[in-house]
Image 1 (tube, rainbow, N blue to C red):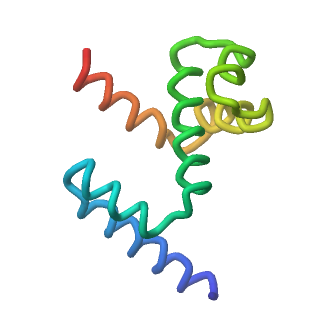
Image 2 (image 1 turned 90 degrees about the vertical axis):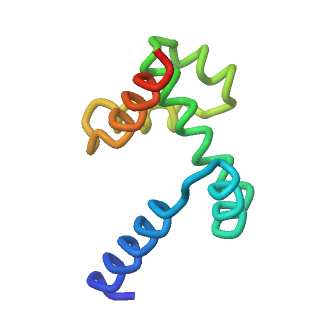
Length: 98
């Protein structure tokens, strides 16, 4: 897949995700798209991001999530220097559940 097609394929995937309206729809879609290991890895990284943002230590996060320190460090780097994707979602979740 060349660079242009990769971008188009990724954008089409994002557009598909934006069509999902309920947790049940998300469950059905991601069950079809991801292996269980891929889904667990994505969910683990999101849990790590939430815990980092809440001020948990690497040790606490590793114990609670099973994530490696390399994964925790990678997520932390994304939180601090990434594209603010985690921030956008976490801020919106906090706004919905003050």
